[in-house]
Length: 82
Image (cartoon, rainbow, N blue to C red; front, side, top):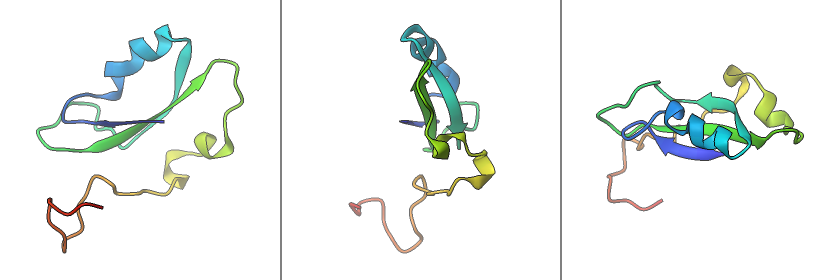
């Protein structure tokens, strides 16, 4: 699992590096598909070719639980450490 940020990259930014290492992308979750002017956390599921894929990584995106890690709760400030 790779956690990244749309402010500086998209999943496609990493595709060449991932494939050159003999890996492949299982899924991309929460990526906007383009760089954004704001922080947006997204995830890339990565596996080695030929390895067994865990059941949770094979679930359709709508079945995965959203963590909303890219959003601060309304009652917090950006300086709060979680």
